[in-house]
Image (cartoon, rainbow, N blue to C red; front, side, top):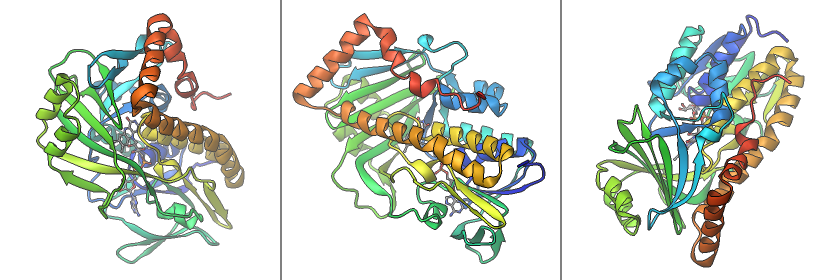
Length: 393
Ligand SMILES: Cc1cc2nc3c(=O)[nH]c(=O)nc-3n(C[C@H](O)[C@H](O)[C@H](O)COP(=O)(O)OP(=O)(O)OC[C@H]3O[C@@H](n4cnc5c(N)ncnc54)[C@H](O)[C@@H]3O)c2cc1C
């Protein structure tokens, strides 16, 4: 079915929602984005966009502005958090030609997508919080917090972890605590090189990479915790808590933590990958994408990249098929890939946080691969990074 002139409502102005809005508007749809916040902004710090996400930004025509705001990664290094010794280096020079891996400030990425949406003729309505989603016939209906209802021809919901649309699709259960908390901060950078460093410890790890032309350094520190008691899902913490938690790490890591004045702590929650990704009604259809469909631990740096993939795949399918066929192809195409990525991130949580003999054996294996078969280390990610949803079969 053609998208030309079709009215589309996108719920959520995060990475997934804005990317979908651009992709649909570029295919002729008349797109309106509804966002609950008063302004398009992103809290938090940096985000890594691996080649599978970068190809979508390229297909959306955003590579040139992206190159102005992002840093191209040279390598990702795994290090022993206590000694600072190198365990494994993934050299980005070993990526395939045309593949790029970026570090970007979240606010800059959202700004880039918001500008792209505006240029594509997308209308964005802020302070539009949806409190209820009704997916019964004839067409999807949204109830806004301030009262009125909106009937949608086509609803694309990129409404995040707590997605009311996923609940309307029958998605059961509230997000569960993964046993991991994350502190995020940005400090001035004094190091050369566009390298993401992952410092591994027992029950914890810390990721750091440069942002904004190397002026800033992103810090994400993760620690296992048995419970997350706060009702809200973010918590402002005394930086001293973070310094204490990583007090046994190397002097270099501790020098970064000493510079942090202001830090927030997130309890990392997720839900299983959705089994139902949308619904058609007699006069409309609704689809979910991004964290609404597959929230994940960030240990493969893929949440936003998956949202970008979803956005492109869905727009493509909707342009070429009836809503029913688009829905069945969408779920078929996305479920297995997203499950594999989410499982990979879970498995990294275990591998990064090992203790005792398993840790020694794991690090020995990675060091050996680093020394004798560094190419192999990179090729282990081919299934992830070589996946180009913008390339037609
Ligand atoms: C510590 C950490 C590090 C990460 N690092 C990376 C990384 O390096 N690379 C990567 O790819 N991913 C990373 N991620 C994951 C990534 O941030 C998310 O997966 C991604 O932002 C999801 O995008 P989204 O558009 O699906 O949802 P969101 O970004 O959550 O956007 C949802 C939007 O919908 C709006 N909304 C929600 N409900 C309503 C409503 N009822 N009415 C109106 N509006 C609504 C929200 O306000 C929000 O703007 C990381 C995550 C964490 C926690």
